[in-house]
Length: 422
Ligand SMILES: NC(=O)C1=CN([C@@H]2O[C@H](COP(=O)(O)OP(=O)(O)OC[C@H]3O[C@@H](n4cnc5c(N)ncnc54)[C@H](OP(=O)(O)O)[C@@H]3O)[C@@H](O)[C@H]2O)C=CC1
Ligand SMILES: CC(=O)C(=O)O
Ligand SMILES: [Mg+2]
View 1 (cartoon, helix red, strand yellow):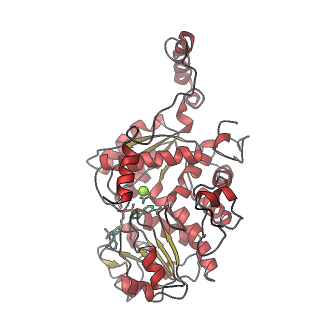
View 2 (cartoon, protein in one colour):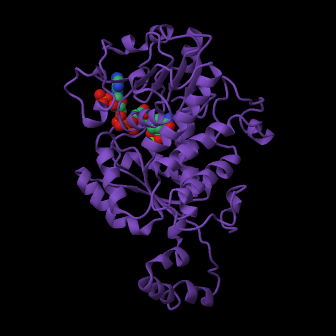
View 3 (tube, helix red, strand yellow):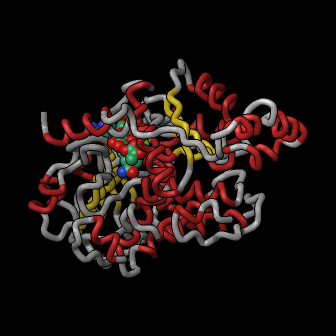
Protein backbone atom coordinates (compact mmCIF):
# COMPACT_ATOMS: atom_id res chain seq x y z
CA UNK A 1 0.00 0.00 0.00
CA UNK A 2 1.20 3.55 -0.71
CA UNK A 3 2.05 5.79 2.25
CA UNK A 4 -0.92 8.05 1.51
CA UNK A 5 -3.36 5.15 1.24
CA UNK A 6 -2.20 3.68 4.55
CA UNK A 7 -2.25 7.06 6.27
CA UNK A 8 -5.69 7.94 4.89
CA UNK A 9 -7.25 4.65 6.02
CA UNK A 10 -5.58 4.97 9.44
CA UNK A 11 -6.84 8.57 9.76
CA UNK A 12 -10.41 7.50 9.07
CA UNK A 13 -10.34 4.40 11.30
CA UNK A 14 -8.58 5.59 14.49
CA UNK A 15 -8.86 6.49 17.31
CA UNK A 16 -12.57 6.19 16.53
CA UNK A 17 -14.26 5.58 13.17
CA UNK A 18 -15.12 8.62 11.05
CA UNK A 19 -14.31 12.32 11.36
CA UNK A 20 -17.29 13.96 13.07
CA UNK A 21 -19.31 13.67 16.25
CA UNK A 22 -22.25 15.52 17.84
CA UNK A 23 -21.40 17.84 20.73
CA UNK A 24 -23.50 19.21 23.58
CA UNK A 25 -23.99 22.95 23.84
CA UNK A 26 -25.81 23.15 27.19
CA UNK A 27 -25.15 22.02 30.75
CA UNK A 28 -26.24 18.45 31.53
CA UNK A 29 -24.64 17.92 34.94
CA UNK A 30 -27.65 17.94 37.25
CA UNK A 31 -31.26 16.76 37.53
CA UNK A 32 -32.26 20.40 37.09
CA UNK A 33 -30.30 20.57 33.81
CA UNK A 34 -32.02 17.43 32.54
CA UNK A 35 -35.42 18.74 33.54
CA UNK A 36 -34.72 21.75 31.30
CA UNK A 37 -33.11 19.83 28.43
CA UNK A 38 -35.65 17.02 28.43
CA UNK A 39 -38.89 16.27 30.25
CA UNK A 40 -40.58 18.38 31.48
CA UNK A 41 -38.77 21.55 30.28
CA UNK A 42 -38.49 20.55 26.62
CA UNK A 43 -42.27 20.82 26.30
CA UNK A 44 -42.01 24.63 26.49
CA UNK A 45 -40.09 25.15 23.22
CA UNK A 46 -42.27 22.46 21.62
CA UNK A 47 -45.39 24.52 22.41
CA UNK A 48 -43.71 27.72 21.25
CA UNK A 49 -42.61 26.23 17.90
CA UNK A 50 -46.04 24.69 17.31
CA UNK A 51 -47.45 28.20 17.82
CA UNK A 52 -44.84 29.93 15.63
CA UNK A 53 -42.55 27.79 13.42
CA UNK A 54 -39.98 30.62 13.12
CA UNK A 55 -39.17 30.02 16.79
CA UNK A 56 -37.41 26.79 15.74
CA UNK A 57 -34.51 29.13 14.89
CA UNK A 58 -34.54 30.46 18.46
CA UNK A 59 -34.96 27.23 20.42
CA UNK A 60 -33.21 24.57 18.29
CA UNK A 61 -30.02 24.16 16.29
CA UNK A 62 -31.90 24.51 12.97
CA UNK A 63 -30.41 27.87 12.03
CA UNK A 64 -26.82 26.64 12.17
CA UNK A 65 -27.46 23.15 10.81
CA UNK A 66 -26.83 22.18 7.19
CA UNK A 67 -27.66 18.83 5.62
CA UNK A 68 -24.96 17.53 3.29
CA UNK A 69 -26.91 15.12 1.11
CA UNK A 70 -25.79 12.75 -1.62
CA UNK A 71 -27.04 9.79 -3.62
CA UNK A 72 -23.46 8.79 -4.40
CA UNK A 73 -23.88 8.95 -8.18
CA UNK A 74 -20.79 11.12 -8.87
CA UNK A 75 -18.44 10.76 -5.91
CA UNK A 76 -15.59 13.18 -6.67
CA UNK A 77 -14.18 11.86 -9.96
CA UNK A 78 -14.57 8.26 -8.80
CA UNK A 79 -17.98 7.82 -10.42
CA UNK A 80 -21.25 6.21 -9.32
CA UNK A 81 -20.17 4.12 -6.34
CA UNK A 82 -23.44 4.39 -4.44
CA UNK A 83 -24.65 6.34 -1.41
CA UNK A 84 -22.82 4.43 1.35
CA UNK A 85 -19.43 4.84 -0.34
CA UNK A 86 -20.06 8.59 -0.52
CA UNK A 87 -20.21 8.86 3.30
CA UNK A 88 -16.50 9.65 3.86
CA UNK A 89 -16.78 12.57 1.43
CA UNK A 90 -20.01 13.82 3.02
CA UNK A 91 -18.46 13.57 6.50
CA UNK A 92 -15.47 15.40 5.01
CA UNK A 93 -17.69 18.23 3.82
CA UNK A 94 -19.08 18.33 7.37
CA UNK A 95 -15.55 18.70 8.72
CA UNK A 96 -14.92 21.63 6.39
CA UNK A 97 -18.22 23.34 7.21
CA UNK A 98 -17.43 23.12 10.92
CA UNK A 99 -13.71 23.90 10.77
CA UNK A 100 -13.96 26.89 8.48
CA UNK A 101 -17.41 28.33 9.19
CA UNK A 102 -18.63 26.91 12.52
CA UNK A 103 -21.61 25.26 10.80
CA UNK A 104 -23.00 21.97 12.14
CA UNK A 105 -23.70 19.26 9.61
CA UNK A 106 -25.67 16.07 9.39
CA UNK A 107 -24.43 14.04 6.46
CA UNK A 108 -27.24 12.10 4.81
CA UNK A 109 -26.73 9.41 2.20
CA UNK A 110 -29.91 8.57 0.30
CA UNK A 111 -30.48 5.22 -1.36
CA UNK A 112 -33.03 6.41 -3.92
CA UNK A 113 -34.34 4.59 -6.96
CA UNK A 114 -35.09 7.75 -8.94
CA UNK A 115 -34.54 11.54 -8.88
CA UNK A 116 -38.17 11.95 -7.77
CA UNK A 117 -37.65 9.57 -4.81
CA UNK A 118 -34.55 11.57 -3.85
CA UNK A 119 -36.47 14.87 -4.11
CA UNK A 120 -39.33 13.51 -2.00
CA UNK A 121 -36.94 12.23 0.68
CA UNK A 122 -35.03 15.49 0.93
CA UNK A 123 -38.17 17.60 0.89
CA UNK A 124 -39.64 15.61 3.79
CA UNK A 125 -36.60 16.10 6.02
CA UNK A 126 -35.79 19.66 4.94
CA UNK A 127 -37.56 21.34 7.90
CA UNK A 128 -34.86 19.97 10.20
CA UNK A 129 -32.23 22.21 8.64
CA UNK A 130 -31.24 25.81 8.02
CA UNK A 131 -29.82 24.88 4.61
CA UNK A 132 -29.25 21.98 2.24
CA UNK A 133 -25.95 21.31 0.50
CA UNK A 134 -26.42 18.74 -2.27
CA UNK A 135 -23.22 16.90 -3.10
CA UNK A 136 -21.84 14.52 -5.70
CA UNK A 137 -25.06 13.93 -7.62
CA UNK A 138 -24.44 13.31 -11.29
CA UNK A 139 -25.68 15.32 -14.24
CA UNK A 140 -28.20 15.73 -15.73
CA UNK A 141 -30.33 14.49 -12.79
CA UNK A 142 -28.69 17.00 -10.42
CA UNK A 143 -30.22 19.92 -12.33
CA UNK A 144 -33.78 18.64 -12.03
CA UNK A 145 -33.23 17.70 -8.37
CA UNK A 146 -31.83 21.07 -7.37
CA UNK A 147 -34.53 23.01 -9.24
CA UNK A 148 -37.34 21.03 -7.61
CA UNK A 149 -35.88 21.37 -4.13
CA UNK A 150 -35.29 25.11 -4.49
CA UNK A 151 -38.94 25.47 -5.47
CA UNK A 152 -40.25 23.25 -2.68
CA UNK A 153 -38.06 24.28 0.28
CA UNK A 154 -38.00 27.66 2.00
CA UNK A 155 -34.35 27.32 3.03
CA UNK A 156 -31.25 27.69 0.82
CA UNK A 157 -30.64 24.63 -1.37
CA UNK A 158 -27.25 24.67 -3.08
CA UNK A 159 -25.63 22.00 -5.21
CA UNK A 160 -22.03 22.51 -4.22
CA UNK A 161 -20.50 20.71 -7.22
CA UNK A 162 -22.34 23.14 -9.46
CA UNK A 163 -22.19 26.49 -7.73
CA UNK A 164 -19.40 26.14 -5.16
CA UNK A 165 -17.12 24.91 -7.91
CA UNK A 166 -18.26 27.61 -10.34
CA UNK A 167 -17.62 30.43 -7.86
CA UNK A 168 -14.11 29.26 -7.06
CA UNK A 169 -13.26 28.45 -10.68
CA UNK A 170 -14.45 31.86 -11.89
CA UNK A 171 -12.38 33.65 -9.23
CA UNK A 172 -9.27 31.63 -10.01
CA UNK A 173 -9.69 31.93 -13.76
CA UNK A 174 -10.10 35.71 -13.79
CA UNK A 175 -6.98 36.06 -11.62
CA UNK A 176 -4.95 33.60 -13.71
CA UNK A 177 -5.95 35.41 -16.91
CA UNK A 178 -4.86 38.70 -15.39
CA UNK A 179 -1.46 37.20 -14.55
CA UNK A 180 -1.21 35.84 -18.10
CA UNK A 181 -2.05 39.30 -19.51
CA UNK A 182 -5.39 38.12 -20.94
CA UNK A 183 -9.07 38.82 -20.32
CA UNK A 184 -12.13 36.65 -19.76
CA UNK A 185 -13.89 38.38 -22.67
CA UNK A 186 -11.23 37.28 -25.18
CA UNK A 187 -10.08 33.98 -23.69
CA UNK A 188 -10.55 30.77 -25.68
CA UNK A 189 -11.66 28.25 -23.09
CA UNK A 190 -11.81 24.46 -23.33
CA UNK A 191 -13.91 22.72 -20.69
CA UNK A 192 -13.42 18.97 -20.49
CA UNK A 193 -16.52 17.50 -18.91
CA UNK A 194 -20.12 18.59 -19.42
CA UNK A 195 -21.62 17.47 -16.13
CA UNK A 196 -22.73 19.14 -12.91
CA UNK A 197 -19.55 21.11 -12.27
CA UNK A 198 -18.67 21.90 -15.89
CA UNK A 199 -22.07 23.24 -16.97
CA UNK A 200 -22.38 25.47 -13.92
CA UNK A 201 -18.77 26.75 -14.17
CA UNK A 202 -19.21 27.73 -17.78
CA UNK A 203 -22.58 29.38 -17.10
CA UNK A 204 -21.08 31.51 -14.33
CA UNK A 205 -18.05 32.61 -16.34
CA UNK A 206 -20.34 33.58 -19.22
CA UNK A 207 -22.38 35.69 -16.79
CA UNK A 208 -19.09 37.28 -15.66
CA UNK A 209 -17.91 38.19 -19.18
CA UNK A 210 -16.67 35.11 -21.09
CA UNK A 211 -18.08 34.70 -24.61
CA UNK A 212 -20.13 31.60 -25.32
CA UNK A 213 -18.61 31.29 -28.79
CA UNK A 214 -15.13 31.16 -27.23
CA UNK A 215 -16.04 28.17 -25.05
CA UNK A 216 -15.52 24.63 -26.32
CA UNK A 217 -17.15 22.13 -24.03
CA UNK A 218 -16.05 18.54 -24.55
CA UNK A 219 -17.82 15.46 -23.19
CA UNK A 220 -16.98 11.77 -23.52
CA UNK A 221 -18.19 11.87 -27.16
CA UNK A 222 -16.18 14.93 -28.25
CA UNK A 223 -16.74 18.65 -28.78
CA UNK A 224 -20.26 19.92 -28.09
CA UNK A 225 -21.20 21.69 -31.33
CA UNK A 226 -24.34 22.45 -33.31
CA UNK A 227 -24.34 19.26 -35.37
CA UNK A 228 -24.54 16.98 -32.33
CA UNK A 229 -27.96 15.34 -32.06
CA UNK A 230 -27.34 13.58 -28.74
CA UNK A 231 -27.19 16.59 -26.42
CA UNK A 232 -29.36 17.09 -23.35
CA UNK A 233 -30.79 20.58 -22.82
CA UNK A 234 -27.95 21.59 -20.50
CA UNK A 235 -25.17 20.64 -22.89
CA UNK A 236 -27.12 22.14 -25.81
CA UNK A 237 -26.73 25.62 -24.25
CA UNK A 238 -23.03 25.38 -25.14
CA UNK A 239 -23.39 24.08 -28.69
CA UNK A 240 -22.28 26.50 -31.41
CA UNK A 241 -21.25 25.99 -35.02
CA UNK A 242 -17.67 24.68 -35.16
CA UNK A 243 -15.52 22.36 -37.23
CA UNK A 244 -13.75 21.17 -34.06
CA UNK A 245 -14.63 17.61 -33.10
CA UNK A 246 -12.02 16.30 -30.66
CA UNK A 247 -10.34 17.53 -27.49
CA UNK A 248 -7.13 17.91 -29.51
CA UNK A 249 -8.95 20.13 -32.05
CA UNK A 250 -10.35 22.29 -29.25
CA UNK A 251 -7.04 22.64 -27.40
CA UNK A 252 -5.15 23.99 -30.40
CA UNK A 253 -4.44 27.66 -29.56
CA UNK A 254 -6.69 27.67 -26.45
CA UNK A 255 -5.87 30.00 -23.55
CA UNK A 256 -7.57 28.01 -20.80
CA UNK A 257 -8.23 24.33 -20.07
CA UNK A 258 -10.73 23.54 -17.31
CA UNK A 259 -10.92 19.85 -16.40
CA UNK A 260 -14.08 18.70 -14.61
CA UNK A 261 -14.09 15.18 -15.96
CA UNK A 262 -11.70 12.45 -14.85
CA UNK A 263 -8.06 11.48 -14.36
CA UNK A 264 -5.24 11.83 -16.92
CA UNK A 265 -7.36 12.99 -19.85
CA UNK A 266 -5.13 15.93 -20.87
CA UNK A 267 -2.00 14.78 -22.72
CA UNK A 268 1.35 16.55 -22.96
CA UNK A 269 0.71 16.92 -26.71
CA UNK A 270 -2.60 18.65 -26.03
CA UNK A 271 -0.99 21.04 -23.57
CA UNK A 272 1.85 21.77 -26.03
CA UNK A 273 -0.70 22.94 -28.61
CA UNK A 274 -2.23 25.59 -26.31
CA UNK A 275 -1.47 29.34 -26.59
CA UNK A 276 1.33 31.13 -24.67
CA UNK A 277 0.93 31.18 -20.86
CA UNK A 278 -1.67 28.41 -20.93
CA UNK A 279 -3.94 28.18 -17.89
CA UNK A 280 -4.68 24.62 -16.80
CA UNK A 281 -7.26 23.93 -14.11
CA UNK A 282 -7.09 20.14 -13.77
CA UNK A 283 -9.81 19.97 -11.12
CA UNK A 284 -10.82 16.31 -11.14
CA UNK A 285 -10.46 14.73 -7.69
CA UNK A 286 -8.52 12.99 -6.48
CA UNK A 287 -6.53 12.54 -9.70
CA UNK A 288 -6.33 15.56 -11.99
CA UNK A 289 -6.71 15.57 -15.77
CA UNK A 290 -2.92 16.06 -15.97
CA UNK A 291 -0.33 15.65 -13.22
CA UNK A 292 1.22 19.02 -12.30
CA UNK A 293 4.70 17.49 -12.69
CA UNK A 294 3.93 16.54 -16.31
CA UNK A 295 2.31 19.90 -17.03
CA UNK A 296 5.32 21.85 -15.73
CA UNK A 297 7.76 19.55 -17.57
CA UNK A 298 5.78 20.11 -20.78
CA UNK A 299 5.31 23.88 -20.59
CA UNK A 300 7.50 26.22 -18.51
CA UNK A 301 4.89 28.96 -19.02
CA UNK A 302 1.89 27.00 -17.68
CA UNK A 303 -0.27 28.44 -14.87
CA UNK A 304 -1.37 25.27 -13.16
CA UNK A 305 -4.12 24.53 -10.64
CA UNK A 306 -5.67 21.34 -9.28
CA UNK A 307 -8.47 20.51 -6.84
CA UNK A 308 -5.97 19.01 -4.39
CA UNK A 309 -4.53 20.30 -1.12
CA UNK A 310 -0.99 19.11 -1.85
CA UNK A 311 -0.11 21.39 -4.82
CA UNK A 312 -0.14 25.18 -5.25
CA UNK A 313 -3.37 26.81 -6.54
CA UNK A 314 -6.11 24.63 -5.07
CA UNK A 315 -9.21 25.39 -7.12
CA UNK A 316 -11.72 23.55 -4.97
CA UNK A 317 -15.21 24.33 -3.73
CA UNK A 318 -13.90 24.25 -0.12
CA UNK A 319 -13.10 27.94 -0.74
CA UNK A 320 -16.79 28.56 -1.31
CA UNK A 321 -19.45 26.47 0.39
CA UNK A 322 -18.55 27.02 4.09
CA UNK A 323 -18.47 30.81 3.79
CA UNK A 324 -21.40 31.11 1.39
CA UNK A 325 -23.65 29.13 3.73
CA UNK A 326 -22.33 31.12 6.72
CA UNK A 327 -23.41 34.38 5.07
CA UNK A 328 -26.74 32.94 3.90
CA UNK A 329 -27.61 31.45 7.31
CA UNK A 330 -26.67 34.58 9.21
CA UNK A 331 -29.18 36.74 7.32
CA UNK A 332 -31.59 33.77 7.06
CA UNK A 333 -31.65 34.01 3.28
CA UNK A 334 -34.48 32.09 1.61
CA UNK A 335 -32.20 31.11 -1.26
CA UNK A 336 -28.69 31.58 -2.64
CA UNK A 337 -29.15 33.68 -5.77
CA UNK A 338 -26.86 34.68 -8.64
CA UNK A 339 -25.92 37.99 -7.04
CA UNK A 340 -24.74 36.18 -3.91
CA UNK A 341 -22.63 33.81 -6.05
CA UNK A 342 -21.00 36.65 -8.02
CA UNK A 343 -20.35 38.54 -4.78
CA UNK A 344 -18.60 35.46 -3.38
CA UNK A 345 -16.48 35.04 -6.53
CA UNK A 346 -15.41 38.68 -6.48
CA UNK A 347 -14.56 38.61 -2.76
CA UNK A 348 -12.44 35.51 -3.29
CA UNK A 349 -10.68 36.97 -6.30
CA UNK A 350 -9.86 40.20 -4.50
CA UNK A 351 -8.59 38.43 -1.37
CA UNK A 352 -5.92 36.69 -3.45
CA UNK A 353 -4.35 40.08 -4.14
CA UNK A 354 -3.93 41.09 -0.50
CA UNK A 355 -0.71 40.37 1.42
CA UNK A 356 -0.86 36.86 2.94
CA UNK A 357 -0.58 36.62 6.76
CA UNK A 358 2.39 34.71 8.14
CA UNK A 359 0.22 32.04 9.82
CA UNK A 360 -1.21 31.09 6.42
CA UNK A 361 2.29 30.89 4.88
CA UNK A 362 3.38 28.76 7.86
CA UNK A 363 0.46 26.34 7.35
CA UNK A 364 1.67 25.80 3.78
CA UNK A 365 5.34 25.08 4.47
CA UNK A 366 6.54 28.60 5.33
CA UNK A 367 7.22 29.86 1.78
CA UNK A 368 6.16 33.45 1.12
CA UNK A 369 2.83 33.44 -0.70
CA UNK A 370 2.18 36.31 -3.03
CA UNK A 371 -0.30 36.95 -5.88
CA UNK A 372 1.25 35.34 -8.95
CA UNK A 373 1.51 32.11 -10.96
CA UNK A 374 1.80 29.90 -7.87
CA UNK A 375 -0.81 31.81 -5.87
CA UNK A 376 -3.84 32.75 -7.95
CA UNK A 377 -6.42 32.05 -5.24
CA UNK A 378 -6.49 32.15 -1.41
CA UNK A 379 -5.68 29.13 0.74
CA UNK A 380 -8.48 27.36 2.67
CA UNK A 381 -6.64 28.05 5.97
CA UNK A 382 -6.91 31.82 5.47
CA UNK A 383 -9.12 33.21 8.27
CA UNK A 384 -10.04 36.19 6.12
CA UNK A 385 -12.26 33.96 3.95
CA UNK A 386 -15.01 33.96 6.58
CA UNK A 387 -14.60 37.71 7.05
CA UNK A 388 -14.81 38.68 3.41
CA UNK A 389 -16.88 36.01 1.64
CA UNK A 390 -19.58 35.61 4.29
CA UNK A 391 -19.84 39.38 4.49
CA UNK A 392 -20.15 39.79 0.72
CA UNK A 393 -22.78 37.03 0.53
CA UNK A 394 -24.81 38.43 3.44
CA UNK A 395 -24.77 41.94 1.93
CA UNK A 396 -25.78 40.63 -1.51
CA UNK A 397 -28.65 38.70 0.08
CA UNK A 398 -29.87 41.84 1.85
CA UNK A 399 -29.52 44.00 -1.26
CA UNK A 400 -31.44 41.53 -3.45
CA UNK A 401 -34.26 41.03 -0.95
CA UNK A 402 -33.76 37.33 -0.15
CA UNK A 403 -32.55 37.98 3.42
CA UNK A 404 -35.12 37.88 6.20
CA UNK A 405 -32.81 39.24 8.92
CA UNK A 406 -30.84 42.51 8.94
CA UNK A 407 -27.06 42.76 8.59
CA UNK A 408 -25.76 40.84 11.64
CA UNK A 409 -24.33 42.75 14.60
CA UNK A 410 -21.26 40.48 14.76
CA UNK A 411 -20.34 41.08 11.09
CA UNK A 412 -17.87 41.13 9.51
CA UNK A 413 -16.80 37.99 11.38
CA UNK A 414 -13.13 37.95 12.31
CA UNK A 415 -13.02 34.19 12.82
CA UNK A 416 -15.17 31.11 13.44
CA UNK A 417 -15.08 32.00 17.15
CA UNK A 418 -17.19 35.09 16.42
CA UNK A 419 -20.13 33.11 15.05
CA UNK A 420 -22.13 33.00 18.28
CA UNK A 421 -20.97 36.39 19.58
CA UNK A 422 -23.92 38.16 17.95
N1 LIG B 1 -12.12 20.89 -7.74
C1 LIG B 1 -13.39 20.97 -7.40
O1 LIG B 1 -13.77 21.81 -6.59
C2 LIG B 1 -14.39 20.08 -8.01
C3 LIG B 1 -14.04 19.10 -8.88
N2 LIG B 1 -14.99 18.30 -9.44
C4 LIG B 1 -14.54 17.20 -10.32
O2 LIG B 1 -15.20 17.30 -11.57
C5 LIG B 1 -15.42 16.00 -12.06
C6 LIG B 1 -16.87 15.85 -12.52
O3 LIG B 1 -17.73 15.96 -11.42
P1 LIG B 1 -19.30 16.21 -11.64
O4 LIG B 1 -19.51 17.31 -12.60
O5 LIG B 1 -19.89 16.30 -10.29
O6 LIG B 1 -19.74 14.82 -12.32
P2 LIG B 1 -20.79 14.49 -13.47
O7 LIG B 1 -20.99 13.02 -13.41
O8 LIG B 1 -21.98 15.37 -13.37
O9 LIG B 1 -20.03 14.86 -14.83
C7 LIG B 1 -18.94 14.15 -15.30
C8 LIG B 1 -18.61 14.67 -16.68
O10 LIG B 1 -17.32 14.18 -17.04
C9 LIG B 1 -17.41 13.77 -18.38
N3 LIG B 1 -16.39 12.77 -18.71
C10 LIG B 1 -16.13 11.61 -18.08
N4 LIG B 1 -15.15 10.96 -18.73
C11 LIG B 1 -14.80 11.73 -19.78
C12 LIG B 1 -13.87 11.60 -20.84
N5 LIG B 1 -13.08 10.53 -20.95
N6 LIG B 1 -13.76 12.61 -21.74
C13 LIG B 1 -14.57 13.68 -21.64
N7 LIG B 1 -15.46 13.86 -20.67
C14 LIG B 1 -15.59 12.89 -19.76
C15 LIG B 1 -18.79 13.18 -18.54
O11 LIG B 1 -19.11 13.12 -19.92
P3 LIG B 1 -20.53 12.60 -20.46
O12 LIG B 1 -21.47 13.75 -20.22
O13 LIG B 1 -20.28 12.35 -21.91
O14 LIG B 1 -20.88 11.37 -19.68
C16 LIG B 1 -19.60 14.20 -17.74
O15 LIG B 1 -20.00 15.28 -18.56
C17 LIG B 1 -14.98 15.02 -10.97
O16 LIG B 1 -13.68 14.56 -11.26
C18 LIG B 1 -14.92 15.88 -9.73
O17 LIG B 1 -13.95 15.46 -8.80
C19 LIG B 1 -16.34 18.44 -9.17
C20 LIG B 1 -16.74 19.39 -8.30
C21 LIG B 1 -15.79 20.25 -7.60
C1 LIG C 1 -14.40 18.85 -4.55
C2 LIG C 1 -15.64 18.16 -4.93
O1 LIG C 1 -16.71 18.50 -4.46
C3 LIG C 1 -15.58 17.10 -5.89
O2 LIG C 1 -14.52 16.81 -6.44
O3 LIG C 1 -16.65 16.51 -6.16
MG1 LIG D 1 -18.32 17.16 -4.86
